[in-house]
Image (cartoon, rainbow, N blue to C red; front, top):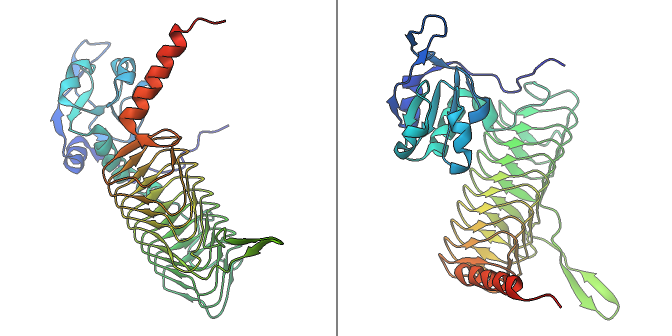
Amino acid sequence: MSAVAFFPLAQPASLSEIAEISGADIRAGSRRDAASGELVPPPPLIIGIAPLDWSRPGDLCFYDNPRYRNALSECRATACFLRERHLALLPPAVVALVVDDPQRAMTLATAHLFPEALRPGSLFHSSGVSPGAAVHPEARLEPGVVVDPGAVIGPGAEIGAGTMIGPQTVIGPNVRIGRDCSIGAHASVTHALIGDRVIIHPGARIGQDGFGFAPTREGYVKTPQIGRVVVQDDVEIGANTTIDRGASRDTIIGEGTKIDNLVQIGHNVVIGRFCAIIAQSGVAGSCEIGDFVALGGQSAVAGHLAIGEGAAVAAKSGVMRDVPAGQRVGGAPARPLRRFLRGAALLDRLARTTKPT
């Protein structure tokens, strides 16, 4: 099987260019030629990225976790982002790019080298509207919209310039999608207003009914869900995530928020700006989540709660009451993180000291 590079290098970059992009301080390295024994300068260009232990000349990598200290000692890359205090660990042949935040620097450099990886593109490598797509004559598409085969765009839908609609994607009637968005394959977007530069990954479901039922003696009576989903600019929504439309008010996803794969957002939920919600989390209906909140993986938030600005919820936590701004909580039911960790440590000590019967 031949090797395939799914993301082509935009163009090689010099070390000075990488340093300028990332704000790094260059500390030159050199290699000794095996035949002559003379010092040889590093390759002048960066042509790829790699993990520390798989790197080779021409690659760029980064180090910010002591777990990978042994891998750093084996690094053969041209250059490596790292902090000043870790310089002594770097092999002398590797150019040190000294920064305060190696992961951020690597992100900036990778985006420069591989810009096509920043958002999903057309799987058909096409431009314009594919003949295999079904676009209603009353839909309005600005110039530069790409629609892959099998996509369905309903009447009254409006899609901004530079947006890509993937194959088998469904865009419902009167939906608004902004400019430079990417809607992945098999996604569905209905009853929604989508801002600019939004990425919706394959299989996501946006705007379907919320889970609303009135209990009666005869069973559950369905409550009409007449709200919308409003997704603000620069939001990213992971694969197979579901966001229900509001019942009587809108479900809102704030600017710059990043939602991982397999997340459930219930009806009427309001999520602030620049939040991070990790995979397999669930937010029940009518919750209000402030700006810069982080929800760890597999966390759950009960309905009608408020989580304050800057709060953080640990993975696998169950939030049963409001969380004040800035507080870190963990456990099920969730409680202040330090108390949760002390309780877990106490139980562990008891388990170790208790004699089996």
